[in-house]
Image (cartoon, rainbow, N blue to C red; front, side):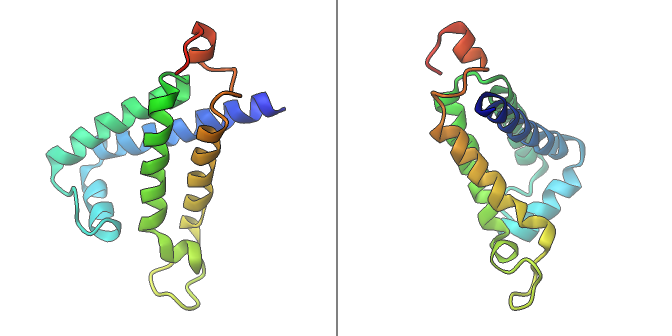
Length: 138
């Protein structure tokens, strides 16, 4: 069961990164709105979003496939942690009872970041990766 659990966690976490990267390329206005609302306006230029989108797609694909895991997993964790920190109000107070600007739908950002940390922490136990199949250490 652990084998399939790690596989599903890896694929879904990586695919989320791919989808976010595609969104930055296909829907630049949305990426700009997200950067304005959650990341202090950093990275709102279309060219920056395009570069970040491509890099995020590549990173997501590496995670999905389980390639270069020792490099990809820490980077994925940092990105997902930054995302969680960007919506910290929704993690601490998902219903907005105390903190204004909360939204319960953003609470899973904490779970996703925790899942990325789990992937990184169990890197040697995930056998269903291309790294493992090729005998590479990742």
